[in-house]
Length: 177
Image (cartoon, rainbow, N blue to C red; front, side, top):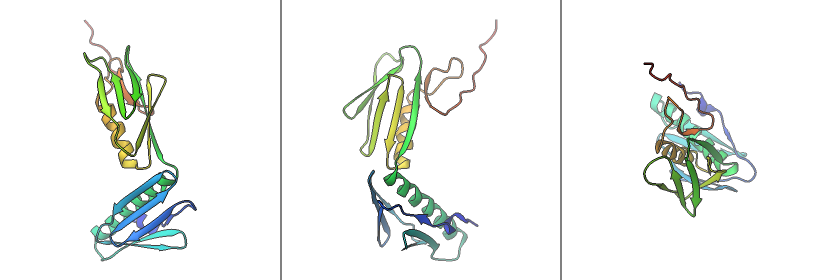
């Protein structure tokens, strides 16, 4: 049985939460996020915390209560502090550049790759080989970083490609004659 739903979500001073029936809206200095609640989960706001309870006594309802608690905790963290993913580009001639709402990448293909940056995410390039993805939504930041990484995943022989800054690439030895 999930026990994560028993832990309350603490709300910082600068974060406002509004419960509108089946929808929860969280507003803070980093932005505003909205999430629909699962029908088997009940949310109560009391004294600067959010408490989650299942509406029925089934295993699924308890599991969904824990899931909704984790999602809303990430939303509160996102609108108060934000999330960040760092990517490193490795390879001769590989580089990145941001122009407006487009990330331009040169990844060893015969053509440059252009990636449209979605709303709610800020992409910054430090140097020419470090890309920082920031935003309030953990899901959106992670998805944008995964999309950028998927354009040229790191290969195991020389390590060329795009990888997360904390990712460890297990290298293979080249074939011997």
